[in-house]
Length: 98
Length: 392
Ligand code: SF4
Ligand code: SF4
Image (cartoon, rainbow over all chains, first blue to last red; front, side):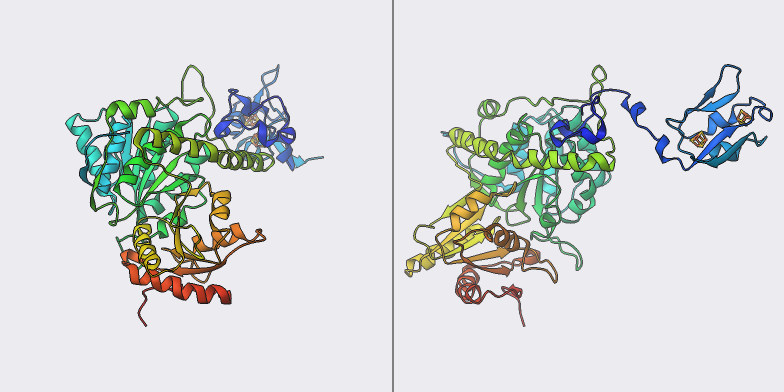
């Protein structure tokens, strides 16, 4: 499947035999961020840098910032709220997506 | 032309012999009546060293087809066989084989579906897998079981095709009948069947993603691509039949004709009952009746052009279905034939009969009755289900 075209521009003639995907790792191109209706935000004053939120995130999209706190990559964060549920210091709040 | 002497052989064993000559790499199968003799013989060949293949004795038909997916995707020539409930159990995996374009060849010894339990032959199992995207070929005797299995590998594995192929033989009437037939020499088969090379085999050095999901914005395109590819295999299938004729002297066609010249009434059959229908045609011709027979050899991709051409000059077309679509149109073959003819300006009246269910034999008198009764109901345009040979 031609990886460079946008999904909405791929024609049936572009589909490879057996719908195989020849470019490895292109799941990274798939944006799950637009599924989000609620958005997690981090309160650094409450965070103890334990990393539990990053471990539980089903998208694997939570990573360290420069200071060693945690933040989400909103290209992938789908707003499931698991991070906020698991954080034991209530450092993460789910708020409405604009 | 093959000069080898005729050999007496059961239809199932003839299919197994074709698989051996095709030098298959992997057989993954689960025994089920009336298919069992095919895979039993293959297991024996592997155990005896007559066939250098991996035989995977799986725990179910679902696993059989799943194992076949893996071996075919790795680039191995792959065979399995099943029947009836076994075909139903592997149903969901059949779509994966065609969607992934894996040229598995499968023998199906057509069998009725439960309930009531029946191990005997009809086309209920075939019709339930009609839309799985497989190429489907009907053999009507042991010779054809042998020939068309070889054709199946050649067709399916070609880079222009790359689709799985079902070779249908009627349970018991073909699978368990010993018939005289011509085999082929290994070197003849080798010249007919080039090695299988999948363009995107499972290969750690060239990884590809196989069997990914498709979001709604892509699924339609993927299905269209697959449907178009299956439809486009038609010319190559005929080419393989022609090539096989050069090798063996036996010519197959997507739609075959028997004494159709000047016929005002045509019977239409698929599978082993075609042979009895031919006998009925001979007897009717002897009485001066202008009756002929059309046999659909290639069920998928459906041979629209050949069918329309075959029936364009007859007044009445009488279709036999060995499967019932309960409370639906009278028989899947009949309704497909009618659909194929609907757009034609000149088309025959069509009458559908259901018969030969669950191993019930139909003899010449039943075919003669279908012709006579068919002329009447076709002229009336009746839609009700007519069953032939049913008591009461
Ligand atoms: S809301 Fe869900 S997806 Fe988003 S960062 Fe939290 S756990 Fe990950
Ligand atoms: S789980 Fe809560 S406390 Fe732990 S790192 Fe994540 S935000 Fe900080």
